Length: 305
Image 1 (cartoon, one colour):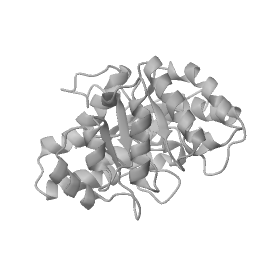
Image 2 (image 1 turned 30 degrees about the vertical axis):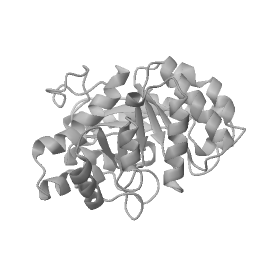
Image 3 (image 1 turned 180 degrees about the horizontal axis):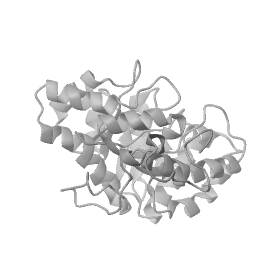
């Protein structure tokens, strides 16, 4: 089973998670920009964070055989903080980077006028840079949030087939599908969706244009939840091809709209996408095999090297 996690916040995870994800079948991921859990105080804080998404995290992921891509944005929650909104002027210099495959996460948290402004501005940036957009639908008032999102999308220059509406559930899936956008579902312990609810939705709505992610972050979350969906699909009678479509081909097709996916040639057979490779687990510096790889003079080892 090959897995592309289209939404996971690896900067909040350990290297043990990378190793476990590889063992579970994860070979590629997208890490969208999100908030830290406490307020950032200036655009400079975002600059350092974005630099880590473009440098350190791809390096760290490669040590465990996983191709790391990212999405760059001012996230909805921090769009309400006037100390952060000047970041909108800085985003173009990041959106041209090779490993940036979308603008995201953008969308709504509390559905404020400031979030309206940030969403519209970043949809325009996505259109200007010919990138797809990863849109966060709010965790509260989901139907109202989806409808407000669709209203802004309808006024934007970005067509729906270049938009992924994330954090959907049973109350929003039908309207989201009718919009022509791609559909994203976060599988998360206790909140959001679980694998069994996801399988029920797949039975009703099919497997086309649906992406499943773990959304794992610093909260109670599970970076292996995508694998749990694949296993639940097989147990429910879905075939291997159905699982491959949901867990691999759909995210490849959506983020492939960027023209920037770089997938391991071993896992991209038959997908018709990008070149390049991520190091396999045999290059894990913890195994002691070969020279220790470095990023800007640093390795993922601690202590004597």
